[in-house]
Length: 110
Image 1 (cartoon, rainbow, N blue to C red):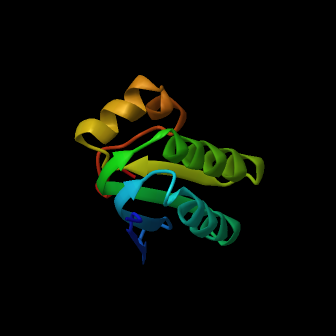
Image 2 (tube, helix red, strand yellow):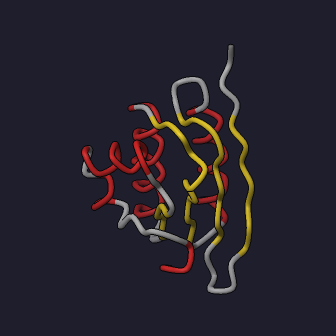
C-alpha cells in the first residue's frame, strides 16, 4: 500500500510561504515532497514547512529536509520547519536537524 501525503501552500502576511505537509515523509513520499519543495524554494525567498500534521519521518525524509535547506542557503534564501511534535520532533532533535533548521514551535514564531 503506497503512502499518501497531502501538501498545501499558504501565503503568510510576513513574507513567508507556509508549505503544509500531512501524512508520512518516508521513502514512498520523499521524491514527490522534494520535487514540490524544490519548486517552492526556487520561486520563494522564505519557505517554512509546517510539519504539525506529519506523523512519521524516516531517514529519507531527513534527506529531503537537508537537501531543501542546502538549496535555499546556496541561493541566499530561507528555509525552516515549524510544528513538529511527538516522535517526529524526537527524530529531528536526535539527528540534530532541529539546530540546522532552527526548528520553531508554530507559524506565529516566524
